[in-house]
Amino acid sequence: MSAITPTRPSKPAPRNPKQPLRKLRSATGSRRVFLHTVLIGVAIVMLYPLLWMLSSSLKPDTEIFTQPGLVPGSLRPENYSEGWSGSGNSFSLYITNSLIVTIGAVIGNVISCSLAAYAFARFEFRGKKIWFGLMLGTLMLPTQAVLIPQYTIFYNLTWINTFLPLIVPKFLAVDAFFIFLMVQFIRSIPRELDQAAMMDGANPFQIYWKIILPLMKPALITTTIFTFIWTYDDFLHQLVYLQQNDKFTVPLGLTLFLDQTSGSSYGAMFAMSTLALLPTLICFLIFQKRLVEGLATSGMKG
Amino acid sequence: MTVAKSGEVVEEQAAPATPSDQRERDRMRRRLARRRGGGWWPYAFLAPWFIGLFGLTVYPMLASLYLSFTDFDLLTPARWVGVDNYDKMFTQDPVFWDSVHATLLYVVVSVPLKLALALGVAMLLNRDLRGIGLYRAAFYLPSLLGGAVAIAIVWRQVFGGDGLFNDFLAWFGIEGQDWISSPDTAIYTLILLAVWQFGTPMVIFLAGLKQLPKDVYEAAAIDGVTPVTRFFRITLPLLTPIVFFNVVLQIIDAFKTFTPAFVISNGSGGPLNSTMLYSLYLYKKGFTDLQMGYASALAWVLFLVIAGFTAVNFIASRYWVHYDD
Image 1: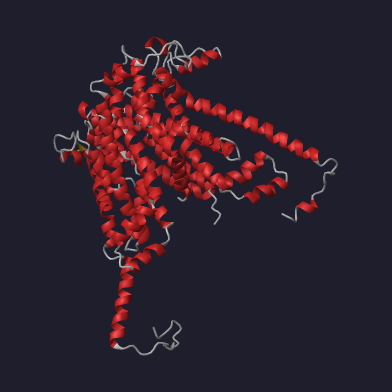
Image 2: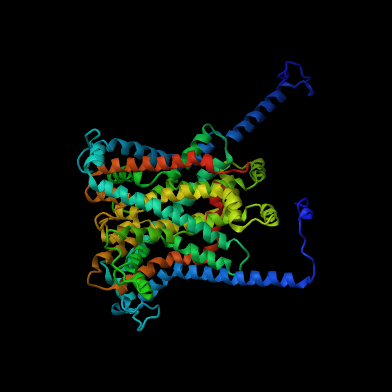
């Protein structure tokens, strides 16, 4: 680079040393304003549907489609109480069911995926490369391709209309994405720690339990958040496996509004939609940074 | 080891080992080898995953292949029908072709738009700007919520006849219509929903942009390279591995889309099958009509199509993806 600079043909004469500098600064200043304007514009478009949902959830039905502004003309918080009790069962049942399913899935994923990841990251064994390749391959397998045989398996086990088909597979490390994430993370933990523990007579399980697990907390938290959100939103499997109203989860409870909306309350539907998004939103607000970074790093090392 | 590869005799430095020393050394060597291999330990750690792999992936894939050659309604034993399901699918089932049409349109339009938007916004965000974290969060949020039924419900209302979108058009004096119930436009509301969720590839692009070597840009700035050339000659080529990663992931994701198609059409795939995405059709055949043999055939076709797209992507990537090492 130093070879290029001296041979530049025309050097601007340093007449007034302050002027070009000020020019530069004001240029980037106005560009900055422009950038912020564009970005704020995009942000408004991105968030507007969500705000519209929130505002509609507080409007009386007559206002939702006639008064397009975000500020309700008159507040109707009853939408929430009516929606809560309004669709078959009380929404508290759906939320309890969703919590059982998501917490079960989180525990399953954290345990089974970390065990598998530890094996892939720390041991040499026959066929390791092939197994690892297979694991990555399952990342690309669409769940729809195995849905029907899985359904018949659970049907024969008489697990239909229970939470088991939604929870048990998570204890069998079926979400390869998290194994991959954790393998990458464990590889960044120095092997000297394992070796020191081994010298002290620890067996591999003790090393996993006492050294690796505590150190991979960030990866475990990322897994927890994503498993929670993805399971909570996983409509297809809940739709297939849960058949009776008393086993319904939040997404299934919400769809009950769809059949009713012909004549009845839109406000209540928006109110429950807002509530349904709340767990994800809270996760997002608390873990925003980790969510975004977990995603970025997992994408980068592929 | 006393004989090296070349055949020379290498002198052993250590004193001759006593039998007990020798035994001790052998034991150490065995223990070390076992440690690296781990004996049965790795298999113990992998046991749950093995059960899952064979019980919930490999076996179901094979079972699905078998079922695809049968007539199966879950309640009575599967009856072998040969290639009837596939034959019917390709030659006598217009709904199958409707779903193929809807799905391909959805994939081919939504993925490039989504990725272009993701890259564009990532480039805007790739600089020192106050509040950049806030923007990033605002743009990522829809992607996180995207799969939720609640969002699909909102979308259905936004693009309904008296929904938000028509209010927006009214500002410009454009008269709207019921976008959801028109067979020409319904699929585009789904596409728009997918594009709205550009946050995930955006975050990955942003991480990639941050790793580009600064000195290349400094050199280009000194040479007076224009921003457009800079983008096409430097940024894009350096970013191709990440573009590739995003393309592969987004295509697979798009093929699997189910929730919004189900919710927006109220489970029907209508109007006129225009939103009958492939996954929705598979669900209807398997779980509404209980034609599980036929649905298995649909599942295998989906699997092969996704595998085919991915394979083509990987092969094509040799010609346009640049790795620096």
